[in-house]
Amino acid sequence: MEYFAAPVEWYWELFPRQTEVEEVVDLGWVARLSVSIIERAKQSGDSGPIGPAMHWAHRFVITQGVDGAWPAKVNLRTGEVVDSTRTLGPADFLEKLGDILNSSEFDRAVTRARESICSAEAG
Image 1 (cartoon, rainbow, N blue to C red):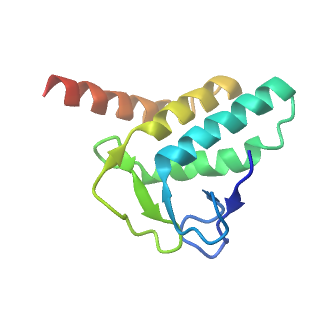
Image 2 (cartoon, rainbow, N blue to C red; image 1 turned 90 degrees about the vertical axis):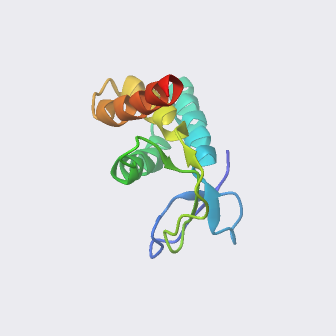
């Protein structure tokens, strides 16, 4: 799957964009793209594409909100949150990446997101 990487001087540097001029991106789309990339890498045995996905994963971990979720849409250049909608999509990506790498590195972020889901369902 092709994408355009955001310039390194942008707030969300190297994050994928669907077009070369796009600045606002849906982080749920980034998470779905990331899952697709790591699943394809696992099937092909080519670990090269996992490098960018690891970068995105680390950014997801440090930008996770106290509620366990992420902003749904952000401006990659400025870092500005575009609307108040929240997403838990990156948790699925982090969980799959941890499984593929046989690593617990992302467990805390995944747990926080899952707890967010449980508290939303209970409330």
